[in-house]
Amino acid sequence: MLKAFTRRSKPDTSSGDDGGTWGTVRFVLGLALLAWAVRSFLFAPFSIPSGSMLPTLYIGDYLMVAKWPYGYASVSFPFGIPSFDGRVLEGTPKRGDVVVFRHPTDPADLIKRVIAVPGDTIAVSGGRAILNGRALAQVPIAPARMPVSPNTPCKTVPPAAPQLAQAGDQIMCSYRAYRETLPGGPSYTVLDQVSGGPADDFGPVTVPAGHVFLMGDNRDDSLDSRFSSAEGGIALVPLDHLIGRAMVTFWSTDGSASYVLPWTWFTALRWDRIGNGYVDGRQ
Image (tube, rainbow, N blue to C red; front, side, top):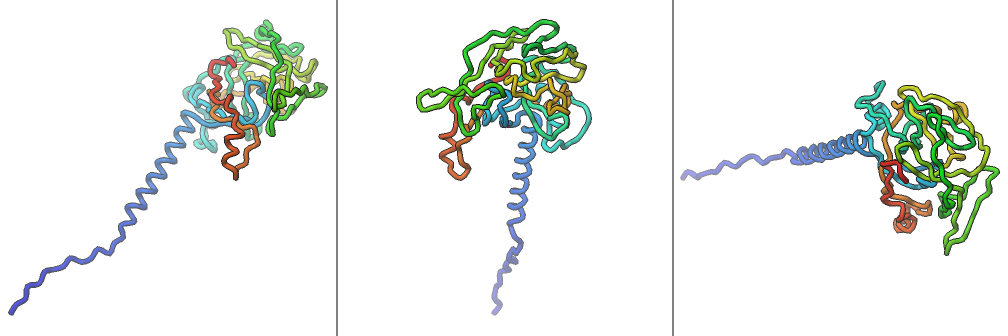
């Protein structure tokens, strides 16, 4: 008697992991490409490492920086890749803009305020900025008071001495302050710690095409465009070195947090700093 046999299909011995692995690789690569594009063309984070922009920016502030306002140069991209000369979609910053830029001679990113743009003549006399022959409006205001913390000591420029005061359970540091106003309206607070500082008299110089003149708001503690590279300053900064414009503080820590103690990330958080904006130059 003949027996009926059903033909069995050959077991599939191939692994199904290849498709899953490749899918994961594509997802990771796509995510990395998206992150690169956002950081290169739209926004990038920046942390404040020094007190040269006090009281506008505190050490430990984390800012979101807009990449598109001034166009794109090699410094706009992570690791300087792609590398090219010049700038595409170039835009000139406005006076009062707070800008992040690449140091002209060192591989470091810094932040300062634009005081003069191409064609402006800038000088400093007795610590007061003079733009196109006219002294900037500067009005004395109440001392700027900042809480002393692990990353923000009451640092002063000699011969100035620290001015400390107790406010509840917080020690506050006070600095002599002024409200400075640029032509067109942007105004902000500047600190003037000493009279006759090393850069209280400067210029005049005319800002050439393709450059900007930058200063820190903490005028006596800022190595800015008043100082040459040989003096540790930045001199006139080429537009090709601009990375972006400061927009908003999204995080700020007083330096007391520990990476291995996650709850301290929040106890060290300066809640009142979050959301501070810098787009219109008024701080």
